[in-house]
Image 1 (spheres, rainbow, N blue to C red):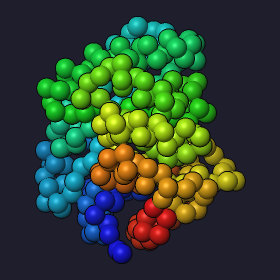
Image 2 (image 1 turned 90 degrees about the vertical axis):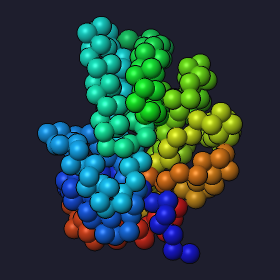
Image 3 (image 1 turned 120 degrees about the vertical axis):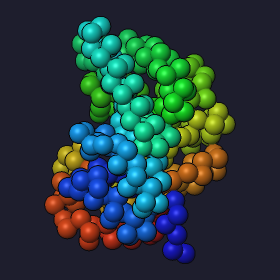
Length: 272
């Protein structure tokens, strides 16, 4: 069955396009879900962006990204709080229900210290986020990013953090690229669902002979992730939101993006 009703595409997936091009081309292709990366909003009139989204009947699924809380430098930690407040305000302005958090890490301190700083920072942001009706989605990253990008490296760690914070304004973004390898993934997805903490679901594929761990992701079906199985687990755990295609790929960014958009839709139907 051809069904794109739950297909969302991240603007970073079609990186060569401007925010305006993403909105217009996604909508023209029958893709109604969009997750917007913040750098595309720099210097933009957010009211005009919101108007363009509305006129194209686009559903903003998330704003990407906040986080990067830990640091040995207290000034940097304060700066991160202010930047995340800006992200929350941007999300509110364009109608995004959540901000995805890449939580951050600092190689000059232990992961445990970084995790404590992440918890404290998110807790501090909750009243600000609640006032603006924007949720915060913690995204656990693959352990290869533990030195600088995130001290939250498994779904178990994300679940534990959410359970400690215990706020309806904080949940989790599950990304198959970062979590597919975990032999406890199904159990942790069940746990996440029981707590009603699944806020987002990101999909792409892991290439067996990847050339770069950041910018050589694959479209669904090009790699070794059992995306359909993980999607079944996520949906069985109670998630009924969008499936967000988030692909970073120099190879795919070099293609004609309109043809690439057709490939995304085909891949989504066949392999997710």
